[in-house]
Image 1 (cartoon, helix red, strand yellow):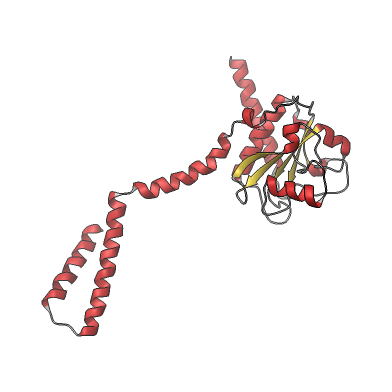
Image 2 (cartoon, rainbow, N blue to C red):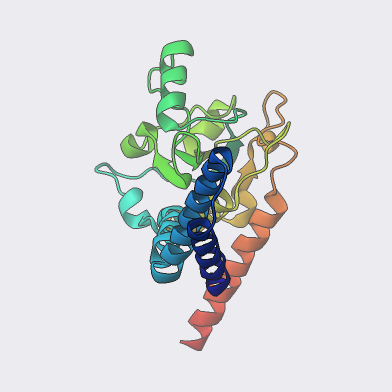
Amino acid sequence: MYRKIFSILTRNLIGFGNRAVHPSEGIIQCLSLTMIIIASGLCISLLFFPGAKVKWANRHVTFDKSFHAQNLDHLCNTDVNHRPWEYIVIHHSATTKGNAARFDYYHREKRKWEHGLAYHFVIGNGSFSGDGEIEVGNRWKRQIHGAHTANAACNRVAIGICLVGDFENSDIPTENQIESLVRLIQYLSRKYSIPSSNILQHKQIHQKCTACPGKNFPFAEIKTRLLQIASKRNDLIQEL
C-alpha cells in the first residue's frame, strides 16, 4: 500500500513539473498533492510509530481494570470495631448518573438524614466515578446502621450496596459493576459469615413496595457467580 502511494505521488510530481497548466488547474493540483503528502505522512507514522495507538488503547484497558484490583482489605478497613453484620442488601440508585458524594449530598441536604449517604458502599458506572469503582460511605467507616431500607431492624444488621444506574427502566449494570459487586459481596460474606440466603435484593425486604434494584438487575447471575467462587474455594481447601 505504501509503495502505491509513493508511486502516485511521484507521477503527480513529475507530471506537474513537465507540462504547462491553467492557473486554476494548478491550484487544484497543488491541493491534491498536499492531501497526498499528508496522507503519506500519516501512513508512514503508523508504520514506524505503531506504539502510539497501542499505548492509548492500553491506557483505557488499565483504567477499567484498576478498579477490579482495589484492595478490599484496605478499602473495608475501619478505625472502629466492626458491627455483627448479618445481611447484604443490593440496591440501584434509580438514576443514570451519580456517585457517593452526590448521593450523600442529596440524603444529607434534601432528605435531612443526619449521617448522609444511606448506603455503606456505592459502585460507579463511569459517570461521576469509575466504571466498577467501589466507593466507601461514611456509615461504613463509622460502622453505623444504614438507611437504605424502610425496615429499621434490617438497617441495623444489613450492609447496603448501591450500584449507580436505573435498572428498572432502561439500564443494566456494566460488566465492571457486576465484577466489583461479586468481589465485594464475596469478601464481606466471608468476613462476617453471611450465608448466601442472606444476600438479598432491596425488594425482598419486608417493607413498603419497591422494585429496587429493578427488573433488569441480573440477581440470578450474581448468585451463580458467588456459588462458583465458593465451590472453587472449597475444592482448593480440600486439595490442600
